[in-house]
Length: 384
Image (cartoon, rainbow, N blue to C red; front, top):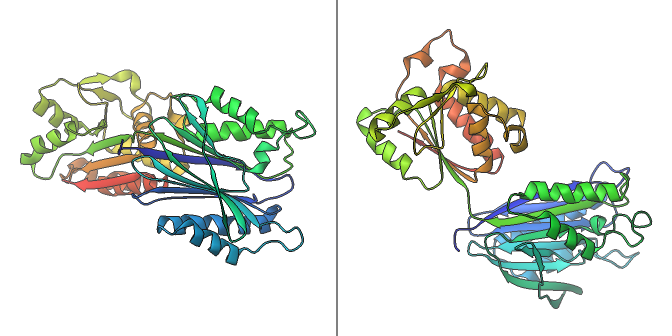
């Protein structure tokens, strides 16, 4: 139960005629907890965006520092006073703090109620009201488990379709039914948030009457990957690295002909080559018992780096069958990635006639690690 991962994503659209969305999302993870917040700024456009962004940043930073909700709301009240004309707060918010064991704290102020989904069904959230700085805040405490979802929406989603397809808008109850019919064990947070916003847009017939945001949090087991690229500097450590690689709890990928030969020798397993996986720029993959993926080395890694820099996402490589696409797919699916980088020098990579990408494998691995970190992956790069 203590080994839970919170997969967070969101999708949003701006009100028609506005370049900036008046909703803001804040997400922070520090190992001790995951804090997410959605704020809807008063009005729309630049001003609303600034107000909402200030709100989410204050909430996320203060909750991560274990500040009490009273302190958070008081800080918001001092920073963002009530609108004198309309006598309402400058921004609403929904805040969630999820701890590693699943214990969860929720605070809601004037946003649509958060959805809690378990086993495909909407769960009841017991809310207690508390008045803080003249604001009525609704607080909840949940115990989340593997497979649970939390879905947070701004008003623009709930009101979609008003005066058009549905006179009263999409409404919370209809969205609840949509979530129950859409969520399954295969869908991820990004896909669900995108589907909600795509439906919102269609209900507005493409012309949004308000900013619309869907924030999704999926509770699941963490996905881990180890990538071993290159033999260790000291060949007497071959067996040690193979043992560590094979004992890893998660998916295993090995890159490089020498790496594959070491695995074959130490494990006493035969390598088979899949010639159907060969592409113009990527050599064919191999297969060895106990290893999820076996690819060529530097050319494959360089291709992965290029695609990461291009912004390739999971869907673009999901059904591709070459080594670089398979490795990238595994990396994009993983939350935590361990890279074992061998320090042994391959004479072929020192040829001055080869491109810069081929000259230093270590540099390619470091840059791959950096690109993955930009995508919020936890990456551990170890040298042998």
